[in-house]
Length: 92
Image 1 (cartoon, helix red, strand yellow):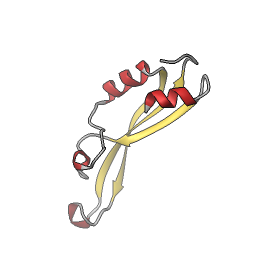
Image 2: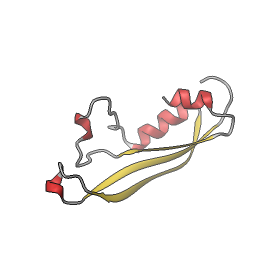
Image 3: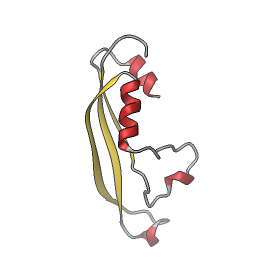
């Protein structure tokens, strides 16, 4: 996916990527096709290998409520967000 983002973005184009952090109460590891188990350092290394500079990397927290989780009570969710810039127009 990152390589496709790199392919379609113009040189110096910017991408915003946000994903759930590890160990969320929503148990995303049990959802089909959900792969967010890597840590921030691993994501940054992968993004850089895919031809991006990482302009911003941070964690954001917010409260969610889901009737099927935590007995319908609000719970804290932590997401990782990244702002990337394509650094070359060549294929990676």
